[in-house]
Length: 151
Image 1 (cartoon, rainbow, N blue to C red):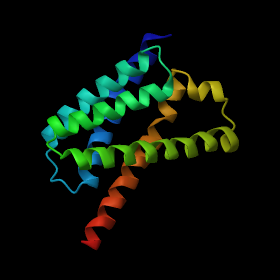
Image 2 (tube, rainbow, N blue to C red):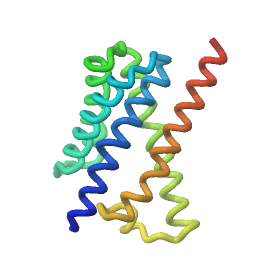
Image 3 (cartoon, rainbow, N blue to C red):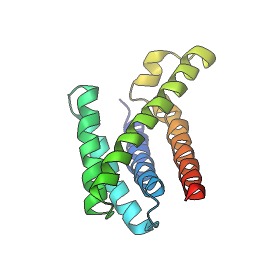
Image 4 (cartoon, rainbow, N blue to C red):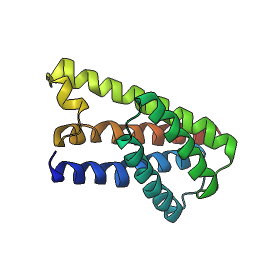
């Protein structure tokens, strides 16, 4: 594969996906936003996501490993309690998979993109994965605002 593809995939995974996941936990737990902690643990999480996805293991195993890493990083670096890290880590994983599935179906059924193009590691799959990540952040932001209005 092209070096540019891996560079774009690396940037998307490390800097965008890792920070979005970490920011989402802060939002959902109503924790005060510590941007330094969010960025540091987000970049570490993004690096872990990138490395784990390169391992030759099944996708479900990736999810379990990444969930453990999300919980561990949020407890140790972000100082979010274990219970909230577990609950919202699971919630974030499930919601992100649902949102990614909806976008996948839209790309394949509505737009007509080839499934192999979307699933592979290439520049198109990297770019079409950005809207689900940003939509997830928007959904988690709205959920946190609704939770704050109820309190």
